[in-house]
Length: 393
Image 1 (cartoon, rainbow, N blue to C red):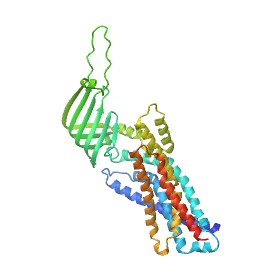
Image 2: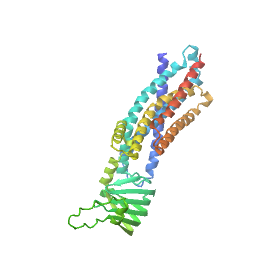
Image 3: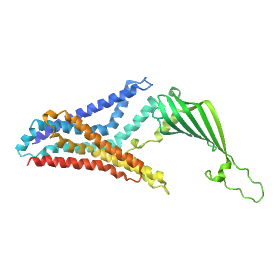
Image 4: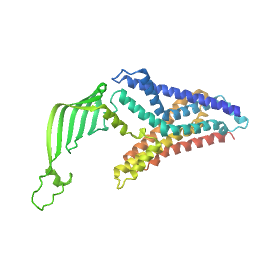
């Protein structure tokens, strides 16, 4: 039996490695296609390989579980089609003992996935973002719908077509309290990183300058100085002066070091390790008198933490499904293995994405609901495995 365990382990491991390589090659091709559309094509080959390496490490949180599912479907489908499982049953060996080799491998993969989700993938995603920012186009900086803050500027772009920006809105806050709102229907991002700068040209820009005007002090002896009214109070309206201006062309030049610092200081959830996610959540919950926004962000960090735990258990879930469904794949249906794996993986990840969207839209939904697809699919896999094992009796 030990010899047969080694035989199954070798078959599953070989199919797993092959599937991971194929998935990595597909991702590499997609990455090269995306890089080919970039305007900056003077890219050293070593830099391209580094980018692809970071990209594949981050996406291994998806490719490894899917590859394990494909390997189990193909290997156990082949064993079932060649009547090898039937021969083992005739010798009194239950299928569950045959499956134990693949299940043991999936447990090892789950620990590996915990390390990938907890540390390696976030670090690769952060390095990938910095590498793209330093070496390629500025799409990640001025992406549509994203709020970007560079020093005292807050930038929002409505749409983008290459280097042409549409519906640009910029808010500049000066140290003296003056606020300038700049709106432009069209703009252009000019990459001047060889000079250490990035230029933003706005066409037909409209300015709305808000300046706080101090009230003249009352020199009457014995009269205490009046407190300035709140900005949002009705009494504060007379103390503000609005100036509307227009310009055919308005240029803003950003120092690229400031852009890089902004990117490194505003890491999203994908850039944070699991320990950093919990630390951010604890810091938000520890604020005195925290508002709704802090509570929503704390919930998002908790959801991301639970999602990575779910992704870490995905190889085990897919193994139960793969070995139980694989024995039902006959010789004439071998080609259905990859298609069946794609359907299962697509349904699994779409459920998680749908739950994530729902939790984001309704902050009152607890983040632990992300465990629902994992529990449901695991229960289905265990039930199917027990059913296959019961048939042998």
